[in-house]
Length: 269
Image (cartoon, rainbow, N blue to C red; front, top):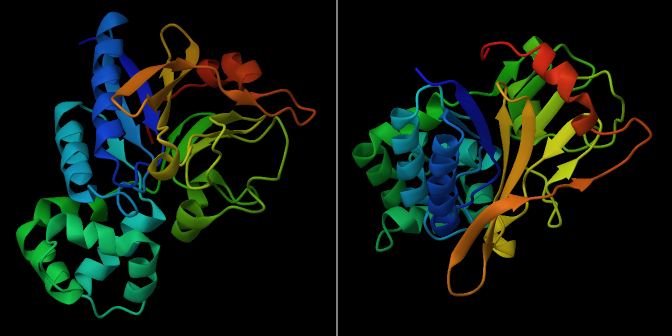
């Protein structure tokens, strides 16, 4: 079997056009480097964009196609899951609707009222609901970890709380040092990203409003880290490698820590 090349994709939010092109690029890219793609979705597949159902289906197909690939739970995915499981009666359904959930329901059943749509989704799309329910809160490869929002820097990596992993912003984004794990995450939009600091790689570039979907490629065999970004010219979606924005905070950046990352690389945990 070919050696794995790992790709992590930031928040999708219903943008099927960009997700399709990103996955096409990744599959061709891994073939070019004579590897096999392992794709980590960092969550928030649904809401805000108009084609959440199709995005979920594409993620499901990708997980089945590429061994080792994982969906990581995003707060919007978790909101959606709760709304479906409660059949529209959960206390958080209104908040979900007001944050893009209505568009997700309409991507499944545009003609139905919200409660009826959620009941129908649960009945007719059990494979997608199971996929979200079994999504990973966090994945660790030694000194680098993958999750949706970030981590509690004061708690061990293997003792992280799900709400932190799916919702945190401050103080995670503000703590600077070069001794913590490098965290690859989405959730917080950096329109001019991807952003690389000393201890985090921020991949949410707000695709639903910026037409830019970002990913990072980690190749343990070649010991390289590179970035991939989609762009939308108005006529077509294009994908290519891109330079990240480096945020210097007196400790260098994660790009200076590649030896540490790859020297300590482990199988997914």
